[in-house]
Length: 381
Image (cartoon, rainbow, N blue to C red; front, side, top):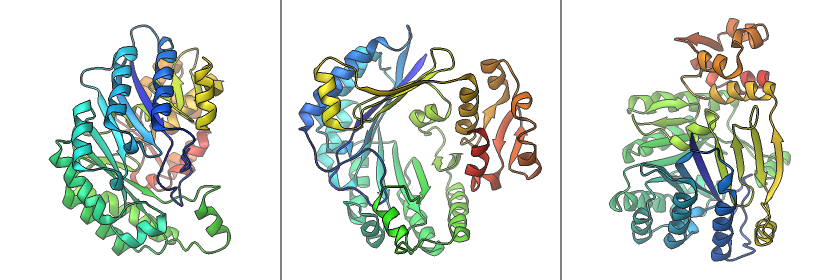
């Protein structure tokens, strides 16, 4: 059984105005203390996966994991290899803030075994970066990408956000063009969402956050598919595009409900056993996380065994994010019941409205439904 591993590093130089992730700027410990906690948790949880499992991907997320030193990253990779049989061809991804990396650091990271970078560019315009509260400039993004290439990285992903405050369709087309000029292997293009508890949510409440109209935002999404497709990128998920052979193996595992273990403050995990699966998460505060680890306790704060109905719903609303959709044969084999028997009547109007279709044995969103995907997913919640 292939297992994915996720490492959460919750510390940042600056908290972005839209960010609702478990991240903070006031580090309550040193990076060495936090890494020591991670190494201990990697050891403590090593008995959890089923016998014979191995790790096929390792992902460093955050926060800003590119603040870690290369020697710290190497210790974590070594621990993953020791305790989880990290495969020789594992995809090892590190999220990077462009303002935190240099050619020398990238070279050292490449030597540790990191073979994929996810660059949080978000925008190639300084004005938009300032509106987002990002801690880097457009110039630093370009320099970071070029340095990564020089350091030997041949699998680089770029994250961009559209529907920003004051952004027009023409400006978004320019962002896409500049990304294509760099020719990364992977592009993630997300529409800005205003999350509760963020500075953007407060601005929206005060009527001070002027976002594009829904129609223009939809046009930006459609233009992404059009321009990236014309540049040789395959859309394999609602917001993700890749050159052939460069899909994110780690993130694909989430959408296909493959098992993964998360380590660090606030990290989430999913295992297929027992019964219909179990999801659990770690305590969010780094100081609480380290205190539990130091006392010999697993830092789990929440744990829930999924019911069969919940597992079926997850299979659909996660799998439908993928362009190819959900294999109806796989659904039947896993749950011993057909999709039509369980959801056929409830979803009849989605088929009639042209939002869902079955093609070559796969249930999938139609092209026009990708913009309205949440209206489909809510049927399975």
